[in-house]
Image (cartoon, rainbow, N blue to C red):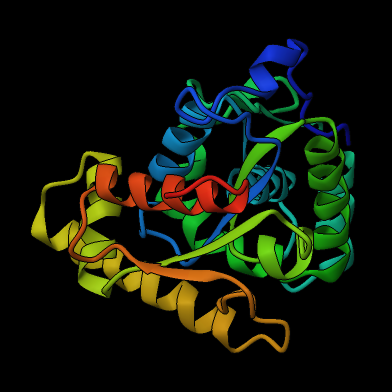
Length: 247
C-alpha cells in the first residue's frame, strides 16, 4: 500500500504566520468526531502556509478497503491484509480533500454511515495502526510545516510536536456539526448521527490504548460555544506562542 503523496511545491509547505515569523513545525489537533477538527485544521494550515493531513480520512479509507474486500470484522489478519493490499492516497493540500482507494475517489463515501459504523473496529487492529502511523510519519517528515488532525496524534504519532491541541465539545454540538457536514436536517437522522458518535466514543474509550485522551502537554480547547473562526484564532494564538511571538 503506498502512502499519500506529499506536496511537491516547497512553498506550499511553509509560509508566514500572519505576515510575521515563518512557522516551521507540527501542530496536532486531536479529539473526538464532530468537534470541528477538520474545518479548524484546514483553516489553521492555510493561515500558516502549512501542509495538512487528516489521519481520520486515512483510517476511513482503510475501512473502505476492508468493506470492499468483504473481510469479516472479527478477522484482524484479514483486515490487515486488505489494508496492506490497498492503494490508499490522502492528499495534503488544505484547500481540497483528496482521498482515493485503488484509484477510486472515496472522499464522499468515507463520511457515510457505513464507514462511520465500521471505522472503529478497523482502526483498533494494532497492525493496521502501525501501517498507517508509518505512512503518516513519512508524510509529516516531508513537510517543513504541517497541521495534523486525528485522535492520537499528540500521544502516539507525534509525541514531540511543536504544538498539541485537544479539541472537545458537548455531545449535542458534535452531532449538529456532523449533521451539518453531511447536509442532514431531518431530526431522526441527526439522532442517528448522535447515536453513532456515542457508539464510537464508547468503543474507543473501552480500548486499552484509547485514543480519546489528550496528551499530557496538550492545550484543551472546548469549542461548544465557539464558532469556527474563534477556535481558529485560539489555535493561531497558541502557534504564535510556540514560535516565540506574543499572542
